[in-house]
Length: 461
Image 1: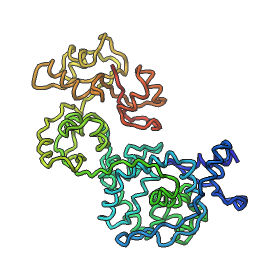
Image 2: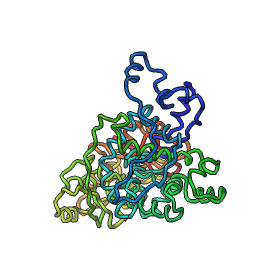
Image 3: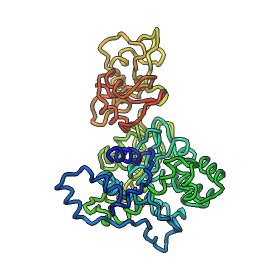
């Protein structure tokens, strides 16, 4: 039984794009009236804890979705009494209770605006709960496969539906723009398959795989296809997992989630920037800290808005005054040099040759990079100071302010291009920093896989 429990827990996804297979049902489940997962979860409890858990009423096996309000479109006409739905309900209720509680608490901040976006797009509002199993309502969620944001868009899909993804910005993490793109994508999937169950399966597996499964089985009934091997195990269990999460989210008290501390709903509006602006200046204009600003705008992954991208939207609380647009427009253009932010030292380079190439003095290079020695190392990273209107000293201040800030205002960064064999721990050791500092500077998950060719900022003292 212990092995079975481990198999079950490891096979269920945590909301960042992982697989979510379910174990098969066994005849032995009939010998105990409790749900399967509750029996597995409490198997190793002590006698005292077992006594307490036994005193709690076991929720009935409910697999039907509460009726949607008349104003909403119907998501599922019929939900079969599939045992996998109850199994996922048990999994979220018992084994993943603490994690699912966090997801529910985060959900309240986004649900009202997501529902409104889906309603305006003519979609069932209950699709908002899809973010529960995709990202746990975390705009910063990042999967091993490279999916990002509330809706776990892959880069290609995000770009296809109008999201900008580059070294400076990742709009898959924008709670407003990504939700609009998710609505368009889900609508297209439903138009193609004329079934919300198949549309959700395609959201998980891709349109091509679902179309092939329909062609192979000769049916557009997701629940019939699910009984075959046409879907992967993850896709076979994707819709039951979604239904289970939605069922609990609609009535959390019924399933033991009675001590929730919901986040306050946030109503955002968008302002447009027409030039590159430092993040710290944006936050100052809104009278908030940088972390608070980034909580509304996790799409900005560097120290400034993209220097070569015009008309970038910024999310601001609707409660801020209407003259904010004027204040934002008055913020000076950042001093970021997008073409030569750093230089990688090659064989034969010297400070003199690099300074001559970029029209800066050796003294400026030494000061900007805090060099203790003028001897360069192969593949060393050098920040190239930008030329301002003032003296060289003023220009270096601009550089330190615009191209090398850290969140706490101290230290700076170097741009590292990921090479084969690189890992976060190896980079931290090589550059004499910590993995935690690298993660914080780049706003990335510790589970992120580094890909050769990627750029990553390394904090330096």
